[in-house]
Image (cartoon, one colour):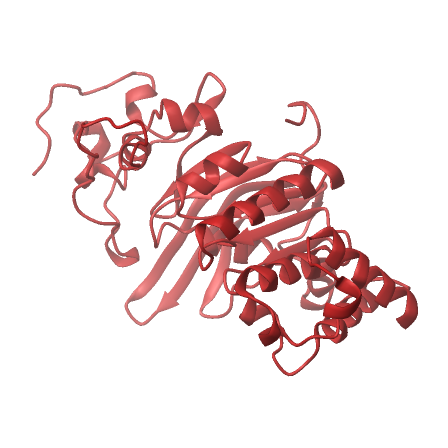
Length: 337
């Protein structure tokens, strides 16, 4: 785990993303803030619609109209990047920030050999000639576990299995030795054994290269195995963030408690899994106060009118009035129906 006083590779402050529609302006991210240290894996977890993938897209400047970054800032190694012109941001993508997508077929062009795609990417971001770029591409394929990389490099994407294609995408993301990688559901389409291999690969790359990773997923098992810290998102906000072991074993936020309580145990316990009532609110119908209050069994009057801010609780931060001062202000009031 990186030292806490080290300058973060990525710093996000009050990031807000909105989508302008005919029905009004919808807020997909609502003033989220977090840091990622050098060599750290930050897991980002939550239900579909929580804002996980939008966060990654905003960081690398891929929010297309009618979406827009409406507030806040993103800094990479201290340099602000959210307000860069398109041309400057294109240089940041790939060279300083790598991207691993859920479906490798969306990252790989099926009409071109793997060699062409890797070599082109390497040459765009470095001063290597074609021969040197090919040697580097072979070395990358070997590093990510592609067998016989000297032969396989000239294959087409469809000639690889799903797990091998994802390894190629990871090699593609590493071409320019980026400081930071966003991995958006990198194991979702893979079977369990291949998932474990990809998880081990990501952890090894972080340890050996010092690369920082933001791992976006809905799978708490992947988070528990891979991440150093985890941010639990709900309705475009961070509900809880802290060391992964603490959040998994003793979650503080009622939503995080529900997520962890819904994970089946292999220890043969007969207790029922936790069920979170209701569903994630639509962007057009996010409740006032705490967005989770309609589904929360611990909500009280203040939760319906005042948005909770992240407050420090030990090594963690949690956005819940149960941990804020005055704690449970208005407690005992009837919970609104």
